[in-house]
Length: 85
Image 1 (tube, rainbow, N blue to C red):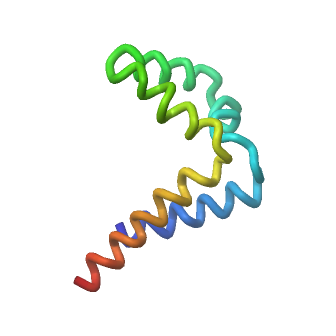
Image 2 (spheres, rainbow, N blue to C red):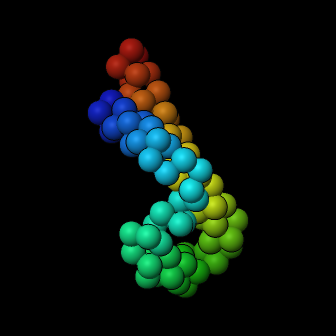
């Protein structure tokens, strides 16, 4: 956790500098156009259908740097708390 968190924060900074406010879904579509269709089908068929509309779609519409920044911040904080305690 203490290594992955800062790496994700660095990735978020790189995404912010490279892509600015481009949505995460647009970035994933540029990397692999079929990935979003597969993700939607798997989520709605094998998990919860409302998970796609209520959770994943807002994440995909947010700027690309926010998801790794939040996850990296949480992991860094948890690693810091674990090291101190």
